[in-house]
Length: 107
Image 1 (tube, rainbow, N blue to C red):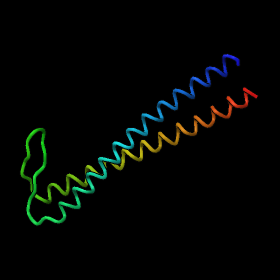
Image 2: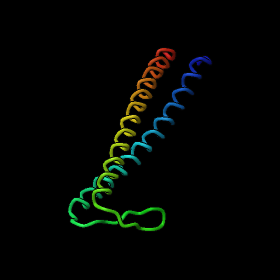
Image 3: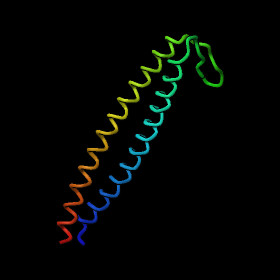
């Protein structure tokens, strides 16, 4: 195996590691999104205000303020997930390309 092929294999390994990191970030954001949606659903069932956690204390807040804040958080999480999905797609395409090159080099 020549040095060029070895470099491509190293690149492929780095891409795979980056892909794993991105998938972990995506999973974390998806979990936050699920928590947000669950909290929003519970908030919609209440008629009065609720509490939000700020650091180590709970603060009383109006239902409308909390709904607005949760919607903004949901929008940010969705944007982050979309961004990560673009990165994931790009890395997968690059990995496939390098993998094809390596297989061609090996043959």
